[in-house]
Length: 317
Image (cartoon, rainbow, N blue to C red; front, side, top):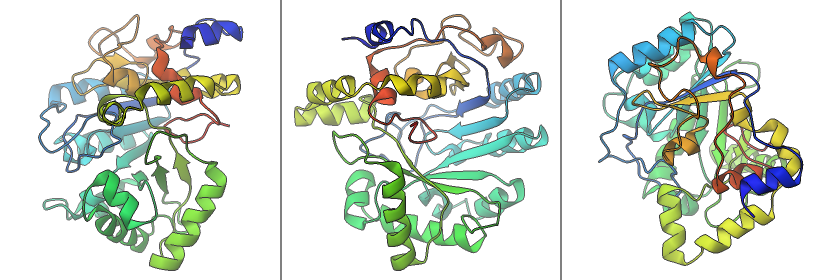
């Protein structure tokens, strides 16, 4: 069964974007970490990064698209891009909500000493990856010492008001499974995270977002090495949940890559599957043009529709 045939079997037909509510910007693959589950394949040795001219065009189109409510900036470690702060400032000037996909350890990197203050001033929402509440599991996925540094960064964010009840400063965490399995129920895992992090480290946060690992790039390579790629892909397909289709992130999101190409989501971007009609920010005069466009799908899309569903905003159902 292919993803397209699964849609047909349940009477959905071709997927189309309903609206353009979120602009997701991937500013490049440069990162201070090289995580095993990373669908981007990001790391310290990557060189792909958004140039100023491209960032300016992204903002120009954003200004022409009032229906966009949220600007979601990702990478790599997006904060390492020289245009990151300009993208944040200009998006906030246009009164957009801004999300930074933060790996936490970036706050402790040399040259980023004023980053937390910048987040606070611009009221940036932080969505931070912490794949477990134990050092062993986090370091296994993300590298030695990452858990300890992540905890310190979370404590600094808390001290600045992030994640504190009533502060209005959003701090959410992201969970990815450590292996070839679906995430557990988001609500129950969130309670476990909150208990463990509060009791052990005094850390508070808002929501836990559970995200299914996509069989793309570095995680796909890992599955091949373990001889589990076919098994994992079969798990995703057999767990197809038609109730997730209405809530898929691609129905309301447009993804722009570091080089200005347009995609239906960040996963399609990493697979080199551009949007069907408009493939570059230089081809359009606003993101509105992408509303009602047909969405490119492939069998990796089972990752978003398996079980309770998965998106950049966590569990779908």
